[in-house]
Length: 86
Image (cartoon, rainbow, N blue to C red):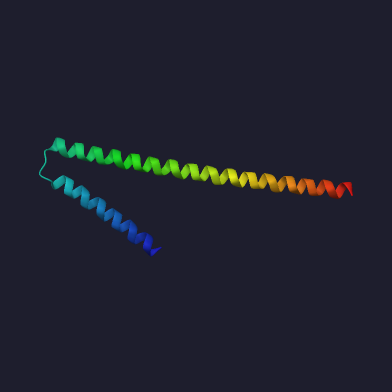
């Protein structure tokens, strides 16, 4: 848990440092806003890609679990049918 907090703190510190650097950079307001906008789009695209990958992996695991449960159910039914026939 401590490592998770450390990583979160490092990422938050880096984000704050970047934001301060952008705001204090000797650029015009328009350039600064454009830089912030580009950075926001890159972050958004990155998060979207990560979420899509995570959802796809979750779907695959869910489908594998459903297939396994279905197979086990069929096996139980077949076993019960065999016992009833005997």
